[in-house]
Every structure is written in structure tokens, then in C-alpha cells.
Length: 231
Image (cartoon, rainbow, N blue to C red; front, side):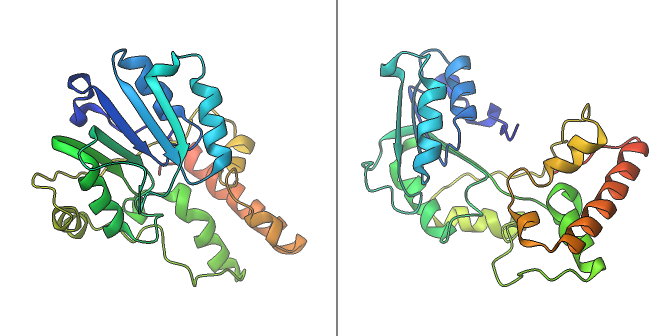
């Protein structure tokens, strides 16, 4: 789940790697498992996620990983030219200052180092992230739209230029889609839309009932059509 394509990073040729915004450590664990000589440094803004990552990686030798809390925009802890690889999975579009985060990524990479980022892509290909908002609009359910959209970096031309402006010389980007687990039944598929959200808790009983009913209908139609829900 939420695993980025690591092939362009040629991690097997690197000795160390920095993961920014490691979450609960799933990606760090996958990397440690696949690349046995690699040392991984991972950090997250959330101390809770740091604790989860430490617990998840505890089965590996302690000299192969370091986990701390930190801010992707500053990274004061790390000296320039410290890492050969840098990854940030679904982090860049969340940080308050993407340009600053990119510059920090370039700063901590060694000459010839490679960075990999994933961001939310095209809204039309991401029903997992857009369907609830669409239904709420249709049903007239109030929602806060004052915050910046997580799709604000979805233009790959503009994003490539932003990366170049940070100092990177060779920049490649591409769109991809990830399916939700297609083996899940309807109830589980619907519940996945709210796994990381407190949205339902903020709704009135009437709005909650209407939203879940319409969402179940839409998800059921998508699944019966033979396609899957993507993000």
C-alpha cells in the first residue's frame, strides 16, 4: 500500500538512503528487506509515526537504520551531501513549502545522487480521493474548501520545472494509478474512503447517512462495471 516505484532510483548501487515522511515505516521496511547492504535513515514530523517505524524496523540490525522526528522543509539535522538516495512518498504536496523541501533534498544529496517523489496526480484518475467530495457537493453537504488542494502539484510540466529550479539537472516524471484492494467486499471498500479521515465525525447524522448511502451506491456500480477504484 502506497509503495512508490523504486526502480528509477537504482538503490542497489547506493550505500545509504534518506526517507522523508516515513509514516509507519512500511516503505523503509520494504527497502531494508530488498537491499541488504543499504543503510536507511527515516524521519517523520509525527512522533507517533516515528514510534511505529522504530517498532516495525526493530527486527533488522540496529546499525542498518536510524529513525527520528523532523521537518522536511528544514532538515537541520543533516549535513550537505550526506545521502546517495532520497525518497519522499506522498509528502511533497503536503508540505507548506514544496520549493523549500526540494531545495533541502538537493542539499543533502551527494553529487550524482538521486531523489524520488510521489504526489497526488490527476483528479480525474483518482476517485479514491475525489468521490466523497464530489458526492458531498451533489448532496449539498457543507465542507471546508479554504485549504489548499492536495492536487496542487498535479501539473507535471510545472512540477518538473520546480524540481529543476531547486538544482536538479535531470528530471523525469510520469503519471501512474494505484488500485485499491480489489478483493475487498463493498462494505470494506466504502470504509477505506474514511480510514484516514475524521470527516464522518464532523457530519450530522442526516448528512452521514445520506453520504454513506450514495457512496455505497457509487462504489458498488464501479465494482460491478468490472473496473477498480484508483488513486
